[in-house]
Length: 494
Image 1 (cartoon, rainbow, N blue to C red):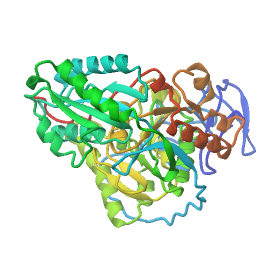
Image 2 (tube, rainbow, N blue to C red):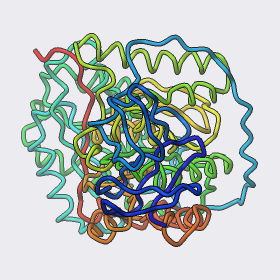
Image 3 (cartoon, rainbow, N blue to C red):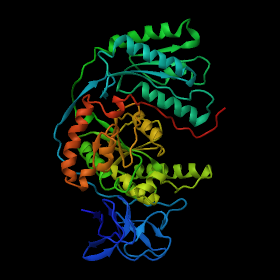
Image 4 (tube, rainbow, N blue to C red):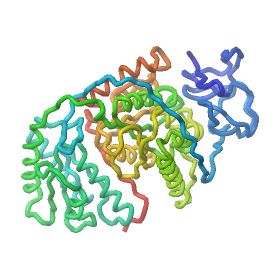
């Protein structure tokens, strides 16, 4: 199959391989001669589209024609313009959604924590309250790895960041919240929190926001208050290691999984292969009693009403409206365009407008009802589908998903990226050429959905792969030790 018309109402189709200028195709009984070379993932016109007339993909307008577009023309950002502008008023039109997916009583091998949560990894983390001690925590992690050989633990990782001081208001609180969420994350069997002593994010105050915790697994050090931070730090870490290294995996129901849904480096196949795959998996996991989290609020613009009408009640609808308008207001307060989102890579991959990107992006969360809406730094409280406030930036959004309590982040991509967050960050390619070319980045290929397999066939393999990863199989970012955090910053630095 050389092309795909996604919805009967569409007036464009997507090239599933590079198509030549002059090539003849028959779509819905109409012969079309292509007027240009059409790269894989890009669109071509199935009809004459007049200037200002809507271009339709996925059954929805994705913008309007900047000029007259002829049958067979290449449709891209030079010929199509977004329809989106300004703030919108929304009306709640609830949909009746029934997943009708049986519970298969599947399990994975995880680590049951005293908090009642379950980890898919048993790692020791060293987390700084402030960036001033980044060098110290990196050295401590290296020393403990060398001393233990990682016997009995999955990893020993330091997570440097730039914040914890010279911040005000929301920025200061967001830093504290994300670091708190990391310290309490079930993938960490134990944590050493390292402070300097004079920073805004004081260790004593930070300790208080953790609530109840296991003092044998979470310990603290202020480097200004000890004679030798390496000697003291290693003594504390040895105590943590002694406890954590005895943890063992046991059978846990799939209902304990919390999975983050993310995309980046998207292309024209994202909304056809990898994102719909995540959507059917999300619905499956929710039907098993599990939870998924969708974020990247700017990449909901243009498709937000689809999510709003799937809110479980009016209160969730109101929270989703706030989620969307609060992010639009953030852009406008900073004198930035609200709807100029597709990156150069997105455009090169075949995505022309924000509506097109959003309609593909939101497919990652399937058809389930929205059960809760989380502010940045909040942790999951409700089973099922959650929406989370965070930007589209890959590192910031993936960090936010992990901080919300997700044990794994699923990351779809049409162009590829090697990064990892502080939980396993699984890369799912939208197309087979990327999977073949970047096997050291990509963990799972969804490109076969438009080649040799149905989405149901791929879903079954995908479910088994995720269970394997939740049970300990490493993904590429873990194999290469690509692990980072990035905290959202909006305000003044002192």
